[in-house]
Length: 574
Image 1: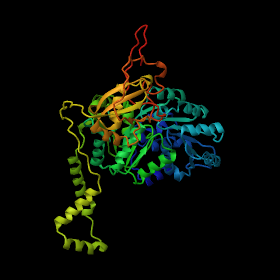
Image 2: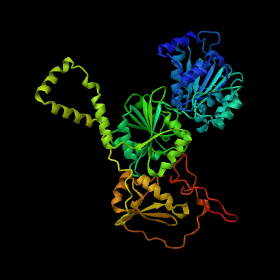
Image 3: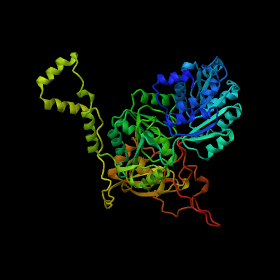
Image 4: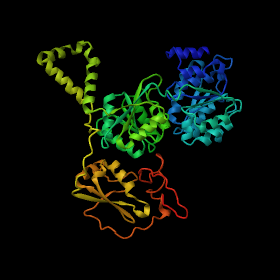
């Protein structure tokens, strides 16, 4: 290892390397193409910095004059790229390396000027790097190494064409390193096309995923999911926590709920500008915020310090997403907790996800209010306040308090102030409470919603959406009547305030459709139901394909239908 690198590692206190760092820096693999699968947080950034160093330094001990870049590191997101840049900066600092970045959201003119001045290493996101190549503002002729970091995430985000374009433009005799949490067929195909005799390195096994993470599956009653999230946050009191949701609408609702309950919280979703996203992450890093509520796409590639808790407010769609989410914690030897919120309706899905991911979770009921309070008292008694010496400036005040108040009064005051600083936990329903018989429906209020049979509206789609967004249960909903151009919903009168409060008073559903309160029961059309018109299915959203998280909000997000088979000679609406 070069002396400059040894000095940098010693200055950072690196006595030993992680398994992935040891594997990729093996002298026997010097200059070889590598296909590496390693979990997030395993120290792979430092690993590939060490792996490409022999090609970059050659026989020299330090870098020469910066000119055309000798190495490219490509990452899926701006945040991850800047994190990689910071890591390589200290590693190569004593060797005199010039490292620059080209990432989306930054001024392209500044990047062109930096590239023109010369750089040894360029850290980039795929789209912006392709722009620079096409504009001729970056010279790839001197490249000795290319690193694709989080390659599976880049393919998931749709960067395949950009990556292929970049690799086709790079010199053929380069060293190519692919780092990926998993190696699906798409990654294997990319490696086969762009790597030469690549060495396959796997530092994790399917039987031992994320050993520094404790997986918890918390059973909750159907109406207690959000209350359970509050209690889990309070029970663990992690320095930083991330709450994963599946849609932007859920992110917004969860962020508002947590903010109202006194948590310092920020949101990350696809609707944020780059500046808003940067400010949110900075708030987490400098301690102004402690909880981040995010969608999967928005949280790609982020690395937050002291992130000890991940909560799955909604279960992910597949095991890879579960591993990616959980991998935000338990990084570089630090312990973490991945907590799944599991109401009865998704119990089987949770078991399937854990089985597919080859994970073992501890099943338990979500922390009760009593459990949170007991945990608070444990933390209170271990506070450093008790062992701190009385400084001179406080001595007179301490003496005055001791003489004026009894020990019991002082303890009660301290306890009261301690509890005021912490959000009160929520009372949770008994998960095993037997189902109660459905009571008589009683007085009700009718609401109307644009979109009826012509738009493919169906009760089975409207019911779960209203329950989820309105924080009510199916027992609070009476009749659902679908007309040609409009739908009518009957809601139990006593549940109406809860519905209005959950919709923040503006009475709009997830796709912006207004829910309008009626003064009386509607005059319903009792005529024969016409056949659905296929030309409208999917356009208005009731029967179309589910939209992606960061796409335009065009549809109601109801449960997905199982495909129906078409019988010969007939057409069955989907």
